[in-house]
Length: 406
Image (cartoon, rainbow, N blue to C red):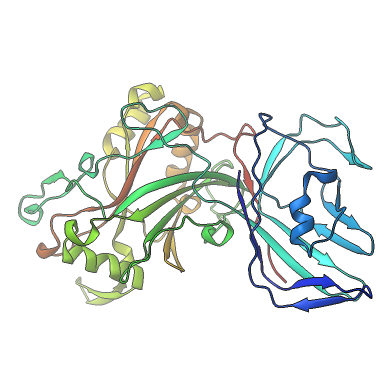
């Protein structure tokens, strides 16, 4: 595991008289690598020398772990840890640097961790550890997929609107190239929906492109609480299935100027005229469609109603409006697809299938709907395959806890 430490306030140092000197220090990096075979390990004592170094070079830092929070204690200073760390923590309790085995069954993995340093003069600083994106789900080759992995696929597996669609309504295999190619997948659990999840991660480093973001992040927000007829605030415990794509190296050569322009309009959130009983303006982003197909429905043990549902919608593009949000950052564009706000029937159906998804092979992608003849044929924006990903949390899915600044 590797961790990137970013300081978001100030770096303090203690002078010879014991006073703190504030220096502007905008970034610092600390890498922790472990060769241990243990899946979980307690944190105490000298397990965190890098934290002591990061927090102004203070030595002999000790971590005292409690049930709901932890703190770093050093002579004269107190370092509070808000239990939001990208660490594998078991239920053991640490007292005076000694590990006990109490509550050892309460093993969990927690993502995101902030440290606030408080000194005698009330000066403080805050650090955030951001997990590296795209490391949770491993990649497998298309020829040798294994359970719990993802793999690249050809966009031609999806059928989209062909060149003659507006005359014959026929759909054809999509062109065999994508603007964005897959580079990683993460799966997190959280107590509430996490919008703009890229803010809480260390995004993959990709080369910048002059016209459009080089990194595309798709955050699929899946509820894990029982479906209710009354939607309420449509927020609660759930999963974030995060897909990462980078701009294709052959983007300029393989992608038509028309589709390049459509991507730019999507990113720039342009408005367009919509013809109907009365002409009106609508966001171009409402053209976004999700592609989802089950490769092996026979392995999901479907009842008759579920089989009809899968047969009717398997692999067919679906407009995602208005259950989506969009966020732009440095060289990335994030699309959040909010399944929490689906209709009751859809959420009920997905909930009934969730414990069987671990047997399924799913092809997932996005496209932008064509509205004019010159926009045909439709092309896949991005796509990949999920190989038997378990969406039921047995403790194997890391938890991500966001930190709200005052």
